[in-house]
Image (cartoon, rainbow, N blue to C red; front, top):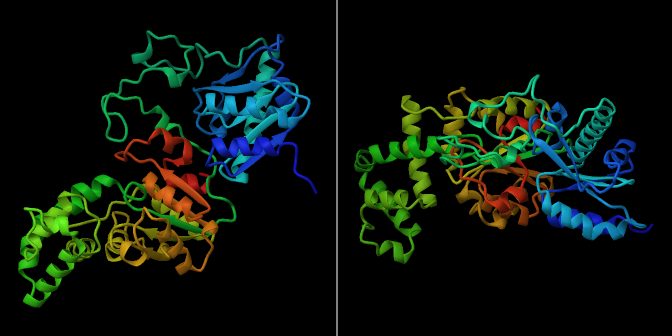
Length: 431
């Protein structure tokens, strides 16, 4: 056995697309003919728009303009590496590169995804060739039919790529205003979960549940009832709580003028104000939320797609685990008293920072996999936090997925490139 002549090209893709797990190279008839639609053979890109199958290639919707880079062929495939790297960097939203008179390189976050995208691209190439025979330009935005120009864009060039149009939404996405969040919304609609994956680890905030529920409902509930709750504790219980809270504070934090290490309320308010994710605080919040859930004052928010995802995972033998900075008790309360009823039956295990450690440390994910008696490579982890995904990847977790929900922090340029994104957990099911 010897390495393929394409080996240098695999490294180019994996280096520039860290989320890619599989690269497929084919000598597709339609792919090579598509590179000849320009008879001068000087075109650097093939443009296709307004075809439904655009949804199958990732990062594109029906009315986006897909730009597929074309590089010139060379006597041997290893000589294509420099050209390939250049166009991959120039066209970050495209998951394939055409080689003139040769074929295609296409990649995905799993071999299933790469295969699906290869088939979708081939369909688009065939469509482009047939359209050319009919005298139609596959890259031209149709003026009639299903296409509609929004009123706010009526004065613009209809053939300008969608991604380049200025968005003027006042509400925006991810709690931002007057910004272009189109890149965060470029859905990857092909399945993310590998077919043989049986272990799914989920974050809560920004993943299964709106961040606003925690910050606007749960946290205020604790502060509103804090004084009455701690004042009703027995002296020994109060002193034990005060000791636990103070032990979790650093000496510098204990010295803060807002903190009285003998006053539970002052320490809790300081922790909440500074968004400190400490075990003692999470434990106290869990106890108080239990009181609120059981009285009916609280109902856990869970996105509507989550219950259907859970049902699909259960029917396909996929185990679901929860890992959140909130205590295990708080997790069970949220899902047990959710707006969709008791969802705990779908969850196999719960982990928090007291059982497994800080979510931004790789060792925490190693610990979880050890508890589950599985190798990290078998785990799929979904979170809205880039630092958590990076820690999981460092731990060897096989697949890390960014969840994008309304109110989440906007993705950074690095995060957008580094992680596959889903906008509904049903996408994990390929739905």
